[in-house]
Structures are given as structure tokens and as C-alpha cells.
Image (tube, rainbow, N blue to C red; front, side, top):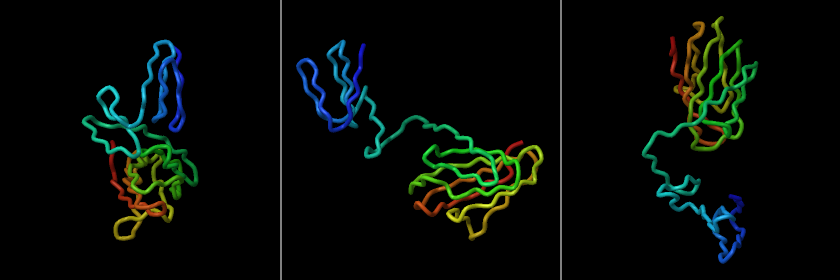
Length: 164
């Protein structure tokens, strides 16, 4: 079947119907239109930014690898979960594309040499105003949990000395 996509605000006309609501898929071989307007589809609510969501199963997101370098700059529009293996002393810069309310984790692994340090951009705020010190044992893992209070303030907590 041939399918045609239309976006909100456009009108689709096919055979004996015209539709101008939401996002529409028209199957031209079967004279069927499916309107995606945030209502139920197949008995399940469609995800949308303006729709309250109730999930009855686990939700997952991809883990995005950060590029190791002198300065590591996460793009918070790419994911909520990140990982990086440090190959030297590094700075975790203020992320780009921060959205208030976003939360997630950054898994930080020492390379086989270990003794790597990490400093943090000014947006990162830690308990008692003190930036944490990473576990420096080779191949050990720390997890930085974060919550974006605003586009310039990230509350963070380090879970230290994880992994075998």
C-alpha cells in the first residue's frame, strides 16, 4: 500500500472524505485514514508533549556514548543517559540543549590506567556546594545522577565506586 503523511493544519482529501485534524496517514490502496491527534490508537494513548502519560510497563531510552577529550560536552537533546570512559583528566562542560525538568545519569568509567579526575561546568550544583571526587581505581565506575532545575542549573549527585 501507498501511504501519505500529512501534518497538523493540513487537509487530506481522498475518495469521499476530507480530514483536517492532527497528523494523518492515508492508505490510498484501501481508502483508510488514521488520524493521530493524541487520542487512543489501538486502545493505547499516543505519547505527546501535551498529553498526560501513564505507563504500565518499563520505559527505556538509549545510552549515548560521550566522546572522551579534554572537555566533554553532553548534548542533552540526544538522550537522558550517557556514558564515557576517561582517558585523562577531564572537564565535564555545561551541557548544550538543557530543558528544565530533564533528568538522567552519566556513567563515568576510569580507563585501565585509572587516577583520572573530572571537573565540572558551572551549571552543575552538588550537595554542600562541593564538587565530588571520582573513584580513581582503574576500571571503576561512578554514576552522576542529574536533574535540570532550569536551563542553567543542574542538581547532581555522584554515586561512587561502583562496578567490578
